[in-house]
Length: 165
Image 1 (tube, rainbow, N blue to C red):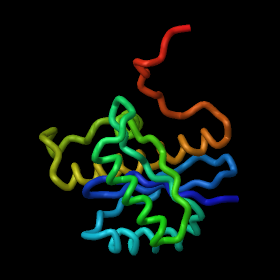
Image 2 (image 1 turned 60 degrees about the vertical axis):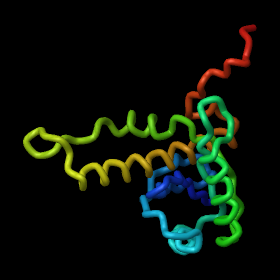
Image 3 (image 1 turned 180 degrees about the vertical axis):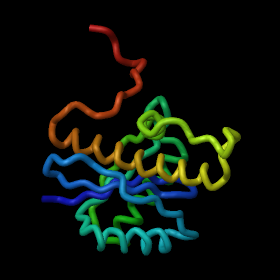
Image 4 (image 1 turned 90 degrees about the horizontal axis):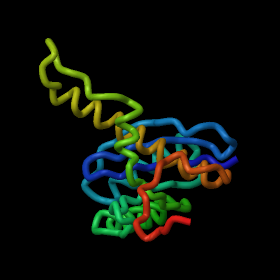
């Protein structure tokens, strides 16, 4: 049984989820702050990998809507490769288009502040961290579904190059 860590990489935060390849669903784990360097990220994630006894990393690849790799995808690909090398685990990249949207749909709207006013900074941060964890679970579940030969759990944008049959 392989234990997997799903990673939703962001500029400020990293959402994490865990699962095994035995058919159990992926579950959100935790959201951590990005470090000032790759070494800092590797140290933080290495501790989680050890605690959770992870065998493989599944990192979300932020492709553009067209499916092309833009600057964010290139940076994520380089980060994932460096992380895999530093931690010593295999890395699989997974298309993460629409995962944050799907996570927001699952979780619902951001809660209002006191007396129905705008949310506080703390409420916004807590909500965003929860979205990041949920997005990591979606990325990981999509990989698990694909490996199991099941239909992907994510809806894919329609490819304009495809023709109707």
